[in-house]
Image (cartoon, rainbow over all chains, first blue to last red; front, side, top):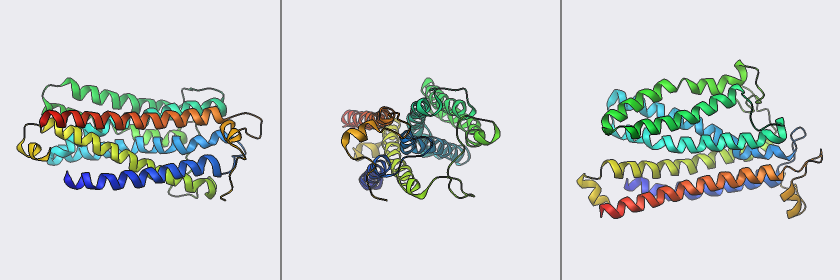
Length: 228
Length: 57
């Protein structure tokens, strides 16, 4: 925990500067999109949130598997710590997408496969938090939470592939591993910067959330008394 | 590549597109929501940690 505390400041300030510079670059320097006009600039806020919301769930699933297989207590704490941060990033992704939809699609909401699967992700995050907090026995709660996280991970490939499997209003991914990016490099660089910066800021939130979780759950242990 | 897209603050605020629509309201609303959400989350965790640390001391 001492080492994490030390790393926290570095991660926070580097990520914050990178995120703010990328957002500034994206909002004021990149040229207007010829189809969407200036509304496309929401991409620098929407895509990082959307990408991170799914990545956090994958991180939760990995931590859940580690907890169930090797019974590592810290993994269980991490699963519970990531859930609220995942809910917030998914909320940001949904809200920013809805606002982007008004000038682009002419509506703030459509029952489109990508949007509905993201809404399901948001509900899942909230459900997982409620489920864990409804148990008085923490060990039982950790076990149920981890199992449910693993079951729910089926939603992640659905979100990813929804724009390919179904005919959706949501545009297909602009950046893929196998193909050349569909957007110009001038627009792509600040997008990468905003994703990396946002990931760093969210990492800091996960560190704070994990710290809170550890302090709550280990409050009776002697090492905690020494730490505080 | 590093030329500003807008000539004044008013232009940047309105973000008028070539089709004549002002998109600034959408972009700025999203920016405010994102920044406030992140800020509120940081404040919540910082305060919660402070409270529990105080109790443990």
